[in-house]
Figure (cartoon, rainbow, N blue to C red):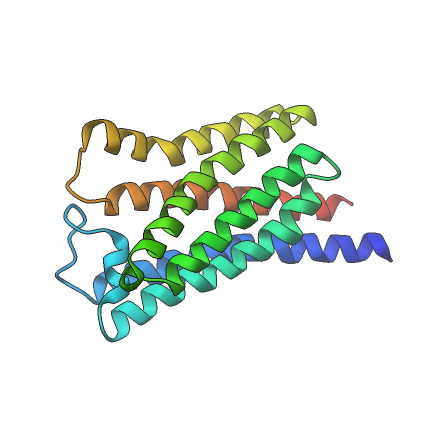
Length: 202
């Protein structure tokens, strides 16, 4: 029975890992569509969160709802999948913190100024750091392919920001936000399918 419960938790965690990015991007892209004045180069994505009406409501809902799903993915999917590795648990904990930062971005929109800035930075910093630590966990478990994939995604999540701060290639941050978030989403969905495959073989 304990093993069956663990498998169910991991499958549910994997399901939320797939659902979270889908929900986030559907809400974000719909919010963008609902606000024609939005500019990919001159706005931050979070600017949508303070637009009255459906735009702000949809954008903020997408962030905190997908953040809660991501938190479940971290606590019940990642912790189970990474096994008893201490390094893996640290990485999963940091990804849980990343998800909590995403929830906070939706709850504390730009109207909250300093808080919003802090949780936004936390999200985009913690995401690649958690992946680099999880890379280490995969390497310790001799899962070389997953280690390589995870470190590459971690680099992909960090690179738009490194490029932005080095060369300021766009006036505002919607593009690096989107690219970094997309990288994290690809990793989450890919890992979730791997979790489901693992439970099917147990």
